Image (cartoon, rainbow, N blue to C red; front, side, top):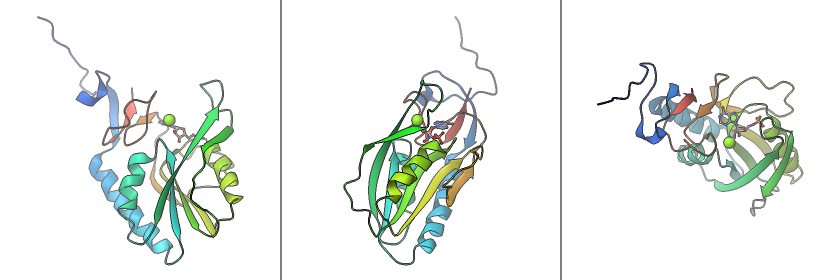
Length: 189
Ligand code: IMP
Ligand code: MG
């Protein structure tokens, strides 16, 4: 009878379809604690005005749903989908908006919610597009920030965690559309 031997440092989870993750970078408790802190920070930063929380799909969907429940003031939620086209490996820097929110942006306080800032190209392009809609204010909240982007025109005002420069999955982040449903954030082997 054969048995599967897993290296001791890998982590077994039935959600991973046999694939090992190298390590858990942020576990459920750490994420919940930080999201709650972010909610308080954001609540305090918007004492008045019409707050519109704009989630960038798909990566922000879990973060956004947890975050808005920690913001204790009136708000509205909408979503955007951005697609960047390149050779498939490296971002070309060209970002297109493939879904426009129906919600009016003019005069509102817009909080753009993103899963992770890597090169920052997606956000920078999106911010330029959104600015043209004349919001009252426009800020970014990113769950993770790799802090490797150089010369960012717009940076995140609210950041969950500084992230290691590794490929991370879970809590909304994917690899080829897999692993978004992990309740923790892990580094792929
Ligand atoms: P940027 O335009 O290079 O900042 O790319 C940001 C987008 O790339 C994010 O919204 C993610 O969808 C994706 N991304 C960047 N780094 C990672 C990672 O470590 N894991 C999963 N997706 C990532
Ligand atoms: Mg992705």
